[in-house]
Image 1 (cartoon, rainbow, N blue to C red):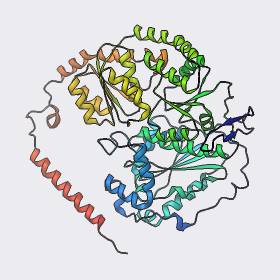
Image 2: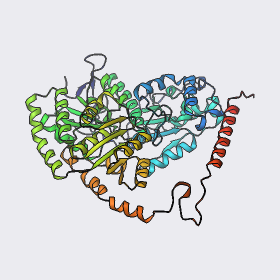
Image 3: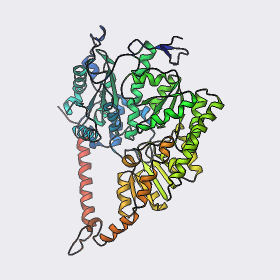
Image 4: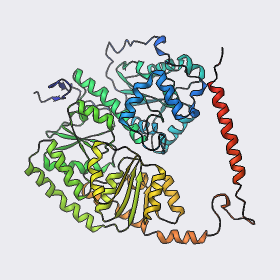
Length: 553
């Protein structure tokens, strides 16, 4: 096989994909000078009749219509296939709605972090405002496109035409490699058919996805929705002919693609762990630019660091790539991961043992140097909760419970089995109620969790840490990760006396309806609140009946 080509095994065994000669091209947000192809300069516009939603979407399809009603309407509008695939990829738990932020934030974050990629949202204005606010709060400095709508444009199909017009206006190959259009809840429920958009306009790839809150349980899984869609597009391109080479020179060693967002230092650490195996660290998916997708598909093995990227794993399997779960966390985790990666890459046993001996002593030393003593419960919605729990256990912590909002998958089995063997209760698709029940049952010295968990736990005078900002935003892999949690965790457990002091200071100021300082303690007007709740319930029922009633012209 020629040195400038790669083998991409698909359903057609032996299919070969080649890089073109653009390996020296520098891709960034600057203007590219490559001319568009003649075929791309004459795009085909779908007729208006094809753009109409499959079912009537009246005013009842708004945000407050309810998950079941929106799900039923989406299926009636032709979105059954999408929702059924989501149900397979992202099975629901005890709660059928996200208990964290809007899931579309995950896919939006992936798109905004990619260079030369434009993002357009289609949804209710309040949703778009919240998503853009959250994205910019987390550091995104990119424009987010928005196609507004009203009941008329939604019902008549004009919304789809407006989206199509916006895509054509933005599809400038000098500025973009791809445009991502995301349907939020209302357009998905109304059957706005993004699948009818052209796949390519003037050489700019068009990626349309649906990310409804009633179909995608968490924002972590929504990252997989977009990553999987992009991998599917890139894999199709690679199977059809030569594709643009990544800007990073292709090394002599086979690579391992890393699946799931990580702390920036972790891929570097993993690369060093792989060197004794004769392997290198490949791209991290979700990627930062389009042509990294080709390099990701070019890897020999995929490390599913985040095991819930089901759609992405499906694409890698279609390309014939081996999938390995878990990650090199702690002593046991690193040893098992190196063995699994080595076996998947056909590395000799002697070389695997040598790689383990090169790194395990340093990890053991780091764990012993910074021990963690105390009982901990842990929960979160990022997808790395089981990995963090493993690291805490190996650091000496008495971890009794770990809850993750993400689902159980075949690639999380090793982590689950290891934790359960250590006496840890593992809860997939954990609800807020389950997280709080675990806190009350195990009475930990420290609770690591989501914002509502942290708030409730601190009210009891128990130290607590927010998982997303204070725990997952730290290195976890190899020797660097072995001691990274000890400082913040031990400091938090050591602050118990401060919580006791605050509780003593505020003792007697009341709670709930009686919170504050009063001359006379307010009465608990439960009867009045129940009466008002019944009035709101009756008004909601009346509104729903008015929505469901047939309307004339």
